Image (cartoon, rainbow, N blue to C red; front, side):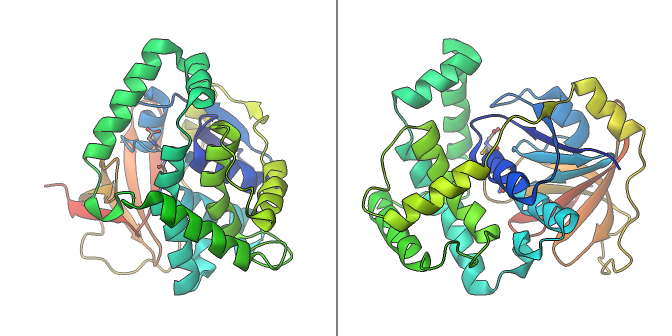
Length: 306
Ligand SMILES: N[C@@H](CCC(=O)N[C@@H](CS)C(=O)NCC(=O)O)C(=O)O
């Protein structure tokens, strides 16, 4: 079996969500670390210009967005509750709130010396300045529908109160963690563990729950080199497409797929599958050969390239 490779960087919250889930699922994985901002030549060779992290790889199949990566982990580990596809609309709305409005509020809260020190240790002082400029530009182009709420502090308090109430059981999914737990945890991890903020004093059940998920989160997987990632793609053919591809007027055509919320860089390729929750593009990479790149449908747009 080909290795599960995660393209990520240490302080990425969405990558932490995947690392913690992999820890819970006890799935072995290989670590391909990348930088906290482009240029990312390896990720570009594989994902064709998709700019967000994390990206996962199984041979010549490339998975963009943590939503799709969670579905893959759910399938590989046989733990259905890790798949966002199992959520009802109320649970999905909770996850969306945790990963958009509340998430960006928590990212804002994380700002301060502990975070600055970690970034400088990783990319140096000039890198820090570039990163600030990069994120400012990214935010300026953000879809207004997902801009952080103006009343961030109140939104966060209400969310923590809701979490506290939901955590009558050990996890949001009951006795064992599921997708809602990892989605609600990673923003808090960033503000508290990376940013060093104390936020959970008034919410003991949330603090206890977050501490248990912190223990599932490991970032000590065996590293894999860029050339081995490219070889893993070249030496494998993309896995067979699911039989139940929905009819889509653009199947077989060259299309562009891009996030519709933020970091909207598009990826171009042939649309080879349209499934209820995902699109798959076939693209040729000079370095990595024929690839299938998977995207969620939710909060992504698809348009003909010509
Ligand atoms: N919806 C995406 C969000 C991913 C995301 O926002 N990732 C952040 C890092 S945690 C990012 O890519 N920031 C810009 C960058 O790293 O270039 C997902 O679930 O994967």
